[in-house]
Image (cartoon, rainbow, N blue to C red; front, side, top):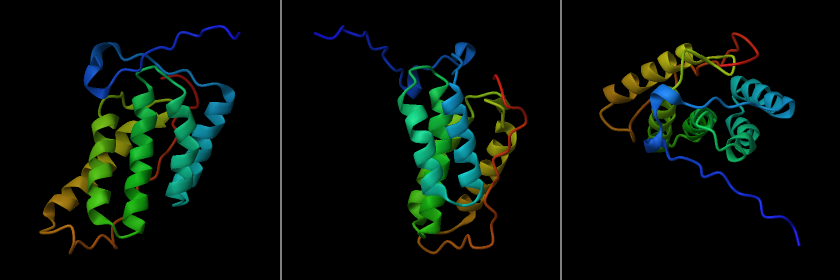
Length: 153
């Protein structure tokens, strides 16, 4: 008979206390997956980036997992844009921003401030469009995810 392992309940986004967000600590393998996802995202391989981050997100109960989920939502948004599914793009982009705004300007070494600003610009552009069905985002640039440092919060 295997031992019973107590599962830590994962909080919902609405349950987060912004003053006490628990830090996420990644194993070396997870740090490598995070970096791999960043490389894939910046190469516009959004589905693959999403997949690289998914396992990290699923294996952590800490509040910091919502940052990883924000990256996943961002990748899903640009995957939808590539497929010209503009409504899905807008929905995922907003969900990504709802998670990214919870975190400091640098988190897990990533320049979150620049990422939030890029997402804000996209959301403003979306809001200028009369209809997502008629939207033309072909000239807009995809944000780059950049590391400022490799460790800590």
